[in-house]
Length: 341
Ligand SMILES: NC(=O)c1ccc[n+]([C@@H]2O[C@H](COP(=O)([O-])OP(=O)(O)OC[C@H]3O[C@@H](n4cnc5c(N)ncnc54)[C@H](O)[C@@H]3O)[C@@H](O)[C@H]2O)c1
Image (cartoon, rainbow, N blue to C red):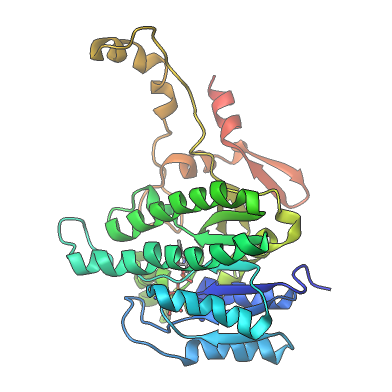
């Protein structure tokens, strides 16, 4: 008995990395899977149909049900054909996971229009295309699960203006889906993952690792915390009937860690009857909202190219963690601020 017996899922970018791990786990939990992957290079160039077909063969190898789709999510009509393929092959579509992605990293002042367009086309337009096509069906059937892939790069990764903007856009789109589709029993949530895939191989840290170890990190990830398969359980959970009440949230999933972001909740409100002058804001801001901007000094951590900031720096303090059950640790931002008061 799997947690997804009888369900049908479409996973984009499911031929490699995180998407592959998701397709395999959804199938092991009993879902029939449309395995979409264009089979491109990391830059989005080229096409290789065997990438999706290989994952289909793996799923069929353990007795699961899957079909390959090798079209691009950047093509609106092709996204429609992905949904139709699920209906033709398996008779329904319950779960959509948008994982497909590429990188064209460049500093903003050097980025070409083509680099901007290529990344937006796959991430933001691609996620829209598949969500748009699938949501019409889910609205009709009165049920569905949508899980979109964003990234912490959205918070401002310096060399990724195209990728960060698209990934922030995906959060906005996910929030809209959550609010507009709830009445049709459709949930939409986003994942901000981290896993040692070829995306990580392309970073300066990944390249340094390859120089020292003679192999890119992704080739040594299997069975470690960085194994992309570790992102899949949270996605599979969100796809189940048990997760019906979880809607419109952004989860970080990194190795053995599952996090929730609360950045869109109000942290404090200042109100002055009749309105403000700039000088009045300058006077009260430092002692009211100001302390909330007061993040710890960046700290150096092993395995990071540069000092970590923000909540990652807060978590570096071991005493900010609580053991809530043997082997299970909990860190909460609230506790950090309570301790500062
Ligand atoms: N690896 C990480 O640490 C990390 C961190 C943050 C976000 N992400 C996001 O997670 C997702 C998966 O990343 P990954 O590291 O597994 O990458 P990956 O490169 O290993 O896999 C991405 C897959 O998407 C496919 N693809 C690319 N363009 C496509 C298109 N137009 N249509 C269909 N398929 C296409 C590729 O062929 C590839 O197999 C991406 O959206 C990525 O931006 C990854």
